[in-house]
Image (cartoon, rainbow, N blue to C red; front, side, top):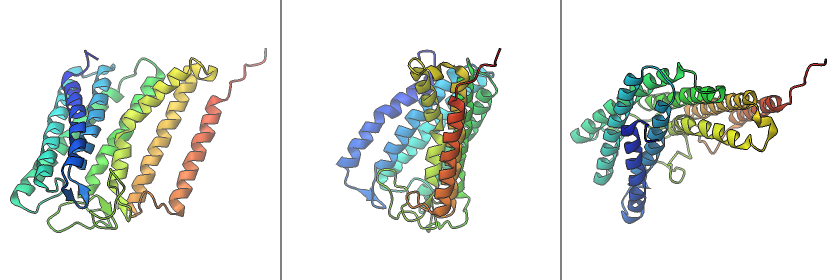
Length: 302
């Protein structure tokens, strides 16, 4: 890891160190915003950015072209993310909303600055993603894990744009230029910690699930590699590649499903018959494909 992208690694360490600080403030500071402790949001962002930046430092250590360009894009990610976290913390200390808030001139300029940082993050993410996707890695398992993880993660990051475009069913509060929820106003009842709406659709669900494909799919590949020492079927690189592809496609399907659910104004924890039917079809397809992938190959008769 000493050879990994140093700015991203330092930023990951900083975010990891700040996360418990904000956790302490959640309990030490009695102030709330929309019924949620003020410091929950900074804590969520530091945890997420710690994972995100560490993963991108690992990705940039893999074989890829445009090494110098990708190094600068990684540095741009750090710069933009540092600015975004600083603004979120500043607004939390003031007891103000950070995202979408245009209630005062200062709030408006902070939101504009955050919009710039988010734009830089998306552009840098896309450039680095293309550079990594274009290259084959050491083996097929790694290649497909990285490709599918980067694609789903990039799509997940891009769903943040839906929060400010005004999708059908969104209600923007006065002096706000965006919203997380669909079908209900922001600030209503939500799930513990994450705050996702329990009365309407919430675009943050797909945003979160999509972004973290970049961590979960590589973890699956590592788990399959570890199990291959004990499970004979998993010793085949071809089998592990098939399982990773199935998992990646299924994960992408779940991402699209929760996005569709949110756009219809439906809470994550209250799915309707259509959502459950699609979910059941996804699970059945994934299990069926996994069974086929694990089926021992018959040797041709002599």
